Image (cartoon, rainbow, N blue to C red; front, side):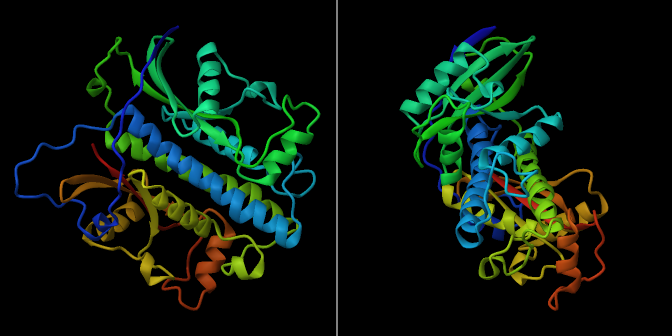
Length: 369
C-alpha cells in the first residue's frame, strides 16, 4: 500500500443562488475556457456538506426536538424499543445503502474510541488522520492511497457530537473507550473515499479531476440514501407502531416531517454552508408554487426524467465568471405518506400518484472550478 499525503487550498466559496434563475444551457458570447472538472478536495467537500446537512437535520429537528417535546428517545436498540435511531446509526445505515450501489464513492464512520470495534481505523494512516482532525476539526486530513491496483483520494472530516443522545450513548455504554464526551467534541471521523482509477503517482493536482456529473451522482446517492433511511427506519417504522405520525404541519404538531420536508430542510442547511453545492426539490405539480420549475431548463428536465427516469437531465450555466453544473434526478414517491399528502391536499395540482411514481425532481447544482 502506497500513501502520499497532500492538501489542496481552496478559496472561500460564495454560492450564487441566482444561477437557478437562468437556463442551465446558457453560454456567454465572450470567449472563455470551459471548466475541466473538479479537484478531489472540492469534490469531497461537496459530498461531506450533504452528509453533514442530513445528519444535522436528523439530530436537531428529529432527535433533539422529539426527545424534548414528546419524550421520544433515540437509543442503540431502536428497533426493539420502537424508538429513534441514534444519529451515528442514521449515518451508518445511510452509508451502507449508498456504498452498496457500487457507484465508486464510499463513505463511513470511524473513531479512535469506537463502541463497535468494526468502526476502528483500518490503517495507520487512518489513525494518524483521526488524530489530526481531533486537533484541527475545521480542516480535513487528505491523502492518496493505492489499493488493489487502483488509486484513491481519501479525506477524513471531523465527526462532531451534534446532540445529547450521541454523548449520552458513548459516555454510558459499557463498551465505550471514552466516557467524557460533550456536545461539540470530536468523536471520530467521516471518511470519504473517491476512486481515481489505474493512474500512476501524480503530484500535479490538475491531473486529478472529476467529471461534474460523477460528483453530482455521488451527492445524489447520499441524498437518496438519507431519505431511504428516514422513510423506512423512521417514518414507516414509528408510524406503523403508532409511536408518532408524519404530518405536513410537523413543527406545530410535534410529529415527523414528510420525507420531502426532511430533504428541504437539509437543502437549507447545505445552502447556509456556502460550500458551492446546492440541491432542491422541484415538481411540475407542486403544492407550494415556489417549488415549481424556475426556468426552461428545469421544466424540460422534469418532463424528461418523468419519461426517462433511468438517468438525470444535465446542463451547465454561467453567472458572471462562475460556472455551474446542474443535474435533475427523478424524485420518486417512496412512502404512502408522500402519496397521501399529495393526493389529498386541497392545493395539489395532481391527485393520482401511486407508489414509486415520479413526483418531481431533485436538482443538484455544483460550482465548477
